[in-house]
View (cartoon, rainbow, N blue to C red):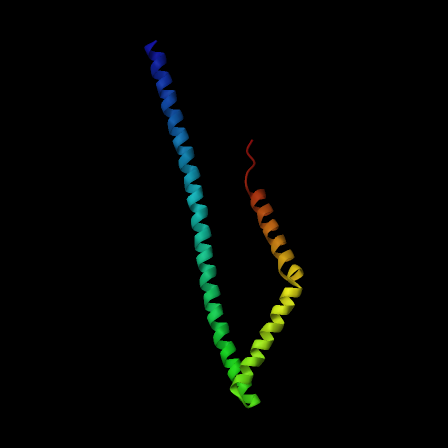
Length: 122
């Protein structure tokens, strides 16, 4: 009887170890995905910030140059502002075709690619 008890204890101990190992794997996978998301997001933020600074400086230079060509510096800023107003109106009018539909397609493709890459477990 004692032998059965020790076998049961050993099986129970192995089951606990296996359960803990499974939990550890899930936690490590979650941490891995989290760090991927954070690092990707951080790199995108840095690229967007650098691009925004570049665009701001280029736009100021362009506005000053246009204003110099037109005779008054502030005319250049009005021209650049008018250009961005026109761009904003075009984006507003065509946002479904220009932004919403492509973004939706991109997300669905990424999701389906991710689902296909995962092994199916029953």
